[in-house]
Image (tube, one colour):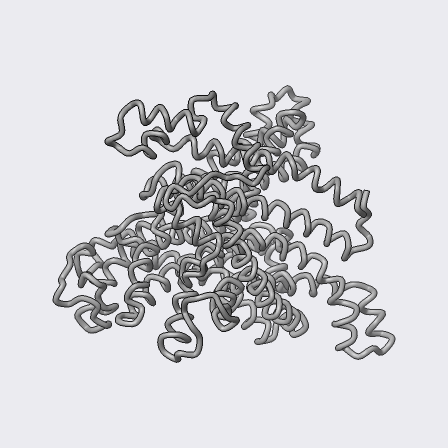
Length: 306
Length: 303
């Protein structure tokens, strides 16, 4: 198994290098001379040249990229142009908060989505099924940020039950987690339902029923375990949606994570921070996909580690 | 949405109805018949027609100029004079939503067109040629897919700058890898089939085989994907508008409207409610219609 993990990681490496090239190139594609922008309009040619040299901008692009890569591997992503703080420190401070939000919303998505999907599948073509599927479709059609704003309106402004801003306690986490988890729970419900329907038609389920097992046991022990295998894949694919949604959710709730940092950096044209934040998000996404692949093989013994 | 094959729909698909005098039904007519029987497709299409008409006829339907401010009547709740109320500058929310429909549909359509025009040929050629070209293209696509979609859109907007046209380009490019992968997968299985061998044996060149023989067979998948993709393009564009990275104020764009409405959440919740509902309904329309289309075009495509 460890060989498989190592192989999967080795395959991810070129993708990560590609990501670093894209991010590096993207920032260089932005019109304008970075040294001039940093120095300001009034700066003399000499000052601009000085800055250009100190940033290594007088070197050819491939050389600049290698410097960038070497520094990134060493944990140096430059300094924020807005407050001068090292980008890595900023990322390290904010990343755990985004992780906390993402984990909480995966929990929300699973706790709502999987049982809803099972319910719909076992009561197929009843009003329960229709209702669950209709709500799920509305769920995937709703803008994440709009749902968040509505939750704030109802639970913070009107009822005053939960705070709309802040990140210190679990009460601060509830609304953002529900907001971010909603769309994923809708997709999970749809996926769980169709996976369950497929499994419930299998011979071994008929056998389990034929030998007189309680329906609850058939569903939970025999059907669900096998149905969850494709569901885990979907959960994995959802991670991208989740990281995208985190940017919006963090903006709505002023949650000081990576997503909020990225949006603020784009608005302030703080390129080193944009570069660092996107690099971190993409790297996380690639590594999570590796993890899901490994987990998938772990759940389904029929998949062999080659 | 409905995974269970309904007996009526099956019968309609399998057995040709004995239409008097008329010959066998064309594919289009068959698909249309199945679409009409699908509740989700009919509902989706109705929603889209309503919003399409709203967008098309906005100048005639809108009771007010969407940009005319009236500061004495700002943030007023819905009333007979302003059915959906007014915003922070006293502009009529209904009029702005009607104009916004036009904008969202145009953004969604053009963005997806960009995705199709760039992504489909890449998928076709990559899948058909295979070999080293395919390998290089697929690794490039791996890299693009390593960015969550909104993050990629934000990166593109950082390069291109904000604004209507750039948002369409950014959202469009984000969908390119999806199309390239989807079509490549289709081509890989289609190119092994006998009709392709037959065409080749008759002396058809690669380009002719790709565009005359393979492409038409991917259309069903392509149409379904495109319908669903418009939904996500509209959501992405609205998200960028909301973040302040998309269509800018004072343009009557739904996402940008929500971005402002957020500041008046206590004073005027109606400014928050209606633009969001408009986004949700439009996206829902495309999703419903896409699901119905998938069932009508090819029942085997069901997820």
